[in-house]
Image (tube, rainbow, N blue to C red):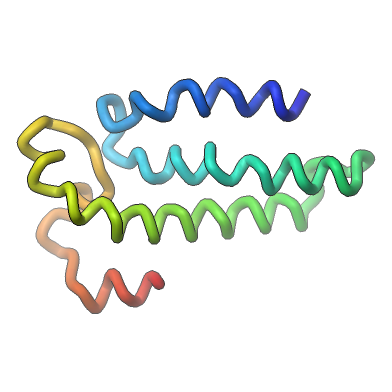
Length: 103
């Protein structure tokens, strides 16, 4: 059931740049769903236990950071096309120091 639940976000992700200003957050939710599935496979009785939620949340944060760094390459194109991105969401406040702090 958990694997089937992952199909909806996987199908929706390609559209997220058009509907949200933070598609990287949705990528984190989608891409790291495997952490929950792995936990459920290893301990079926406690599929969504606190440790699993902590691993899932930390993986989401990591994905948000690395994909924001990657999104900086597309800032001009995303702005021109009216697409959402956390790189654009930060406005002109991004600096190399802040981006590197996330890594």
